[in-house]
Image (cartoon, rainbow, N blue to C red; front, side, top):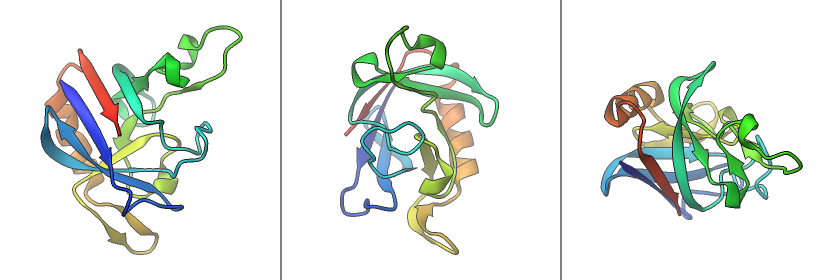
Length: 147
């Protein structure tokens, strides 16, 4: 299964990065990330590129996946960062409504809209994340493109 996250420059800005998530070429949901902040851990959306998505059992978000591409400085888990190298890890896909709720991760939701009281975000995130979990099954052989 291949996931494409196509970011929307019109909807994105200093308060967040928003896009659409496709599974094997079909629109599935929308995404919400922090704005670009020079790939700073916990403060930036993930870099544009190709990724492996690795199964990860998150203490906070349950059975999810993490992005992994060492060439971009993104590692699935801290243990995967080679000695002497720096990089980000634990960039998950999970539920959240607003960019400030994700720490370098990707949140999913039904639609992008202004949500009181915090502004632009994604709706129905818990249900959308549950549907995504059902769709990807055992989480094996997942890849992603972020553009």
